[in-house]
Amino acid sequence: MPAPDPEPAVPPTILSYVYDLPNLCSLAGLGCTVAAIYACLIGMYEAAMIGMVWAVAFDWADGLIARRMPGRTGSDRSFGAQLDVSIDIVSYGVTPAVLLLSYGGFDVVFLPGAFLMLAAAAIRLSYFSTFGLSENAQYTGLALDNNSLVLVLAFAFEGMLGAQTFPIVLYAICLALAALNVSQIQTPKLSGNPNNVRLLALYTCVMTALYSWKLS
Image (cartoon, rainbow, N blue to C red):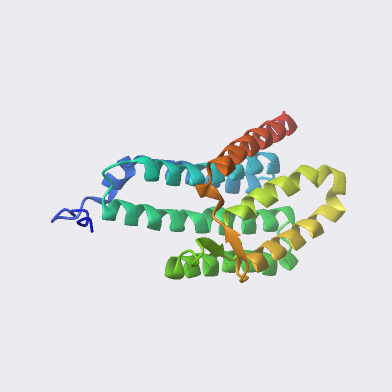
């Protein structure tokens, strides 16, 4: 059995973890998320979709980089995991909630949906932090990154459905995602498969091109 990673006698400074490449990647994803929230608030939903899909791309990338970096200590891994969880609640809970509220014109009827979306994200992350993957290395409940991927795809059909219908469709999608997040369904860990990473890279590029074209 290998010896555990040696830990420093004096804890490192808080900001020293910023220089860890996987954490920089996580923070880049947070930057995309902040940009997406800002775009939602000012009604630039195409820009919000670009920020949301890139937040997922950076989220997947940080894990890939971390697994390939030698010499990371236990505290490095633990800090990175906590940072991921903290960012995930913003990226996949707060952002969809703000998106729903903003697209609904901040009408009070959209408030319960926004709460349920955020509450489901918090419960889902707390459950995962407690129990991790299932015995067959799958997630219990729909992983939260799927929320953004589905919403980004759904917004591609916004123009076809119209301003009267799409808010209702968006509300229904958000409620369905929240229900799936806290369900007992078993879903695979998509980010660990190289083929899925390639698909996400393609999806990110296609959606970025589509929404950039809509913005122009």
